[in-house]
Length: 77
Image (tube, rainbow, N blue to C red; front, side, top):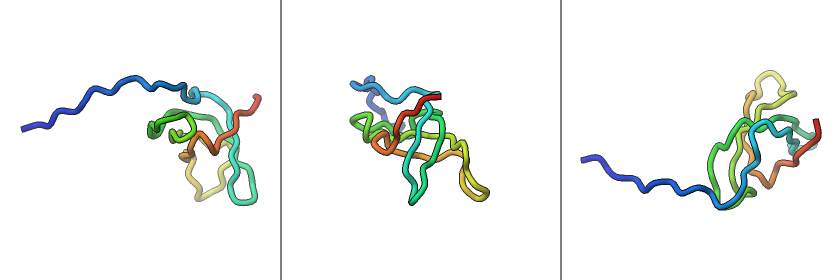
């Protein structure tokens, strides 16, 4: 018998919009990328996980990474 899931209610906060350019600290460097979507909803924009397409990833690194909203800083184009 299939299980029922509760309907998802809309988030009560605004997430970082797709297409927003962002930076984040990574070890001793700064990463640069563009938000491509929400990876996992949290309870606030800060603890929501976002998918970010890296602008300057190196060979062997993933092209898309996941970061919390708290780790991201919006940048100007």
